[in-house]
Length: 111
Image (cartoon, rainbow, N blue to C red; front, side, top):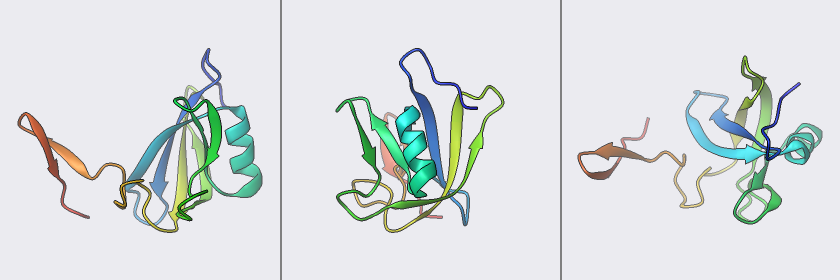
């Protein structure tokens, strides 16, 4: 089973089940993982707000989880998901919509 760190958290990477693009990274605690498994929708734990949240609970842009993979050390997850709308709160398809360029950030080309 997955192993949580001393704070009761682990990293979760959400990738598009169709093309493998990394959509977002967030933390999960045991409750978030259980809710994700029960509901089929990605749930996470917000460190800044100190609470459980479901991706899309306000925007409607949920992530339907197709498969959950656990890494070799059992301390990180990859969730293969089907996004219903943009994954990023900015409206971008992925939270990784910029690239490092010189001393700044530049928009990346969409896949």
